[in-house]
Length: 256
Length: 239
Image (cartoon, rainbow over all chains, first blue to last red; front, side, top):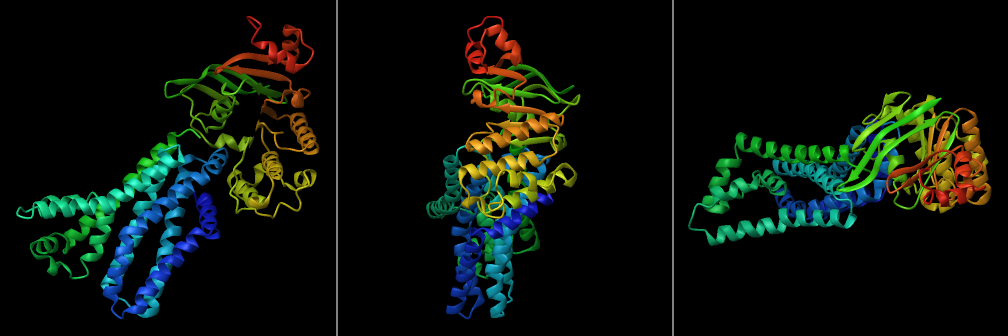
């Protein structure tokens, strides 16, 4: 596994995408940080980017890279190496490359600014965990679909569902059933969306729940405590393990 | 001496039957040419031997041991794919080094002799993306030949090669044969490999339509050249 990991990790950093991704996050964090002296405001702005664009970038990169690499994967699989080693080496190296890109792109400007707050830390963790979840999901789509266009379409549909469609549905439920305690219905839905879980991980440290009335109070009650944090981290772990497990099982039986 | 034995091999893709009850044997120090029309199951068969395609049923025995689902037996296999898609940013040396890491130093020989023979000296350190199709095929040949294999699986090895490189490759294949390796070669270009072939396997609709010595085939079909004999396989009953 480590042979493939080393090779893939070095190859990622010899390519252009990871550098572009690092530069994009670095510019965004530095740019926003340049216009404000408040780390919380910077975190809020980057959070919007994190929940909307980063999942799309990670999904597309992972899926497209899988298809570009598919023939080479089949060549590697003709060598004396197990499928589990190839899968794990590839998945872990991709996750670590992109996590390192997020760490240097986001954390470096924050450290340079001397901003060390809870919100800064939670946003860093959210970005990291989101990378851990989204990369296996992208790989799953790639492995599942033989056709590149189908895999990419599936990735875009997934992204659309967990970002735009999900928010729209939640908003519609909240508006149309505002007289009912819809929060009890809406909150369990959060656990079905890794992007929203990552968002909540950050929002719980920003003290904006007070602006949200009854919903905010309920939100505080559920997510602010240790149990809430545990539930978020547990759900995000499931969002990492489940797609990885599914992708691995399909990869193990796949014909190349 | 028998090195590979295939017993009742079947492969379905969904409801489509790609390989039907394939039973074959391959021997040390012999070259077997696998041929047949397009989509007859040749490449799928080769991929089954490498574990790239997982058979629906049947057994593949290498030196008597069933190898389906295993990977370490491939330390003794060298593979030259038809259209290798190497990462464009890597150099042939990078790929060779990865191959050495996976196979282990004891299973790979130094590539210098092959690099020289295929005139790859200038290209060995250049990114694959800058190499022509023919040069990439030479790299493909060098990588496969560098493995100290007992079985070489070569898929259309001479395609995209210039005549000189094609002759060099065939000389190297014969050398491997003399050293006792088993060579399994899939090709459509029969005249170019006629003098290499000891055995011929002809696939038709996923079944083995003919398997045997080249001279026997020529005798049965009353043809003096292999290409003519192959063309007659489908016409001869009970071959």
